Amino acid sequence: MLRKITLILLVIYGLLALYSTVSLAATHSVPSFMTPLATLTGFIVALLHAGQRQGWGRALLLLSLVFMVSLTFESVGVATGLVYGPYHYTELLGLKFMGLVPYLIAVAWFMMMYPSFVMADWITPASLKGAGRLLAIAAIGGLVMTSWDVVLDPIMVAGKNWVWDVKGDYFGVPLQNFRGWWLTVFTTFMIYLLITRKGPSLADAAFDRQALALYMITGCSNVIVALTGGLGGLGGPALAGFFAMTPWVIWAWVRMK
Image 1 (cartoon, one colour):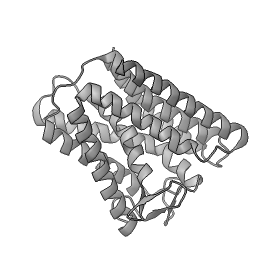
Image 2: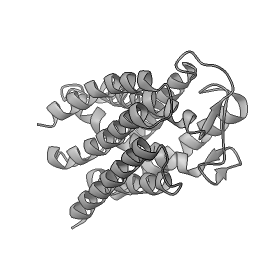
Image 3: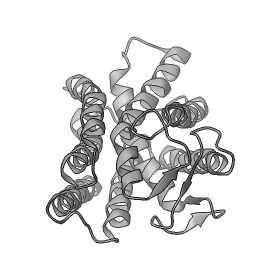
Image 4: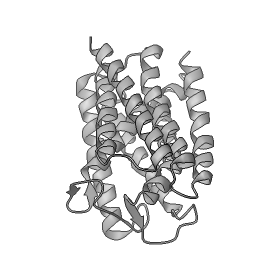
């Protein structure tokens, strides 16, 4: 029953992403409630999948770590310019933690960090054991997640969700940001894996493709928005994001067969 609910919510998330993408392409606008609604729906899909795959204790541990690490790193980043580079959030994403980072950001971190973890788990060779496997999952998961930001960050800046206080080398985004993203994910996954030693997981390729689909839907909608959403000058990030994410998607999909 829970699997069916997860699949239904994944379909709803896909429809919400499709609506937002078409709306932006056609009218260059989208209702303000769509971003939090879609993000919360994707978050619930990720959490339900994690609970069934990892067990609810481990799923809630990962959720807690994602919130703690991401909010800590982001708060330090906004306050000092460390980690990601100097930036600040506008008011568009809602209530902020300590007046610095919108809580919705932590929700989005989990929404995409979890499928990145699943993909990294499959991509990492089964022959790799022990500490080497834990390091590989954390490192690859960081790369998978950061590949998404290649297209996401320019979109969110163009949409005035956050503002860079410097002119970065990557379409206005400082390269330090991507190192910070990787470090955030790597740190979260390493803490989780060291605590749990990964533990038992549901080795079900068909079910794990739902997590992969969550990543694909989000990434594809972002690429299309960057190309057609009227945000201006985002063809470069769209192509860069497509080529950054696609190898990981293909690699994970092939391994899940």
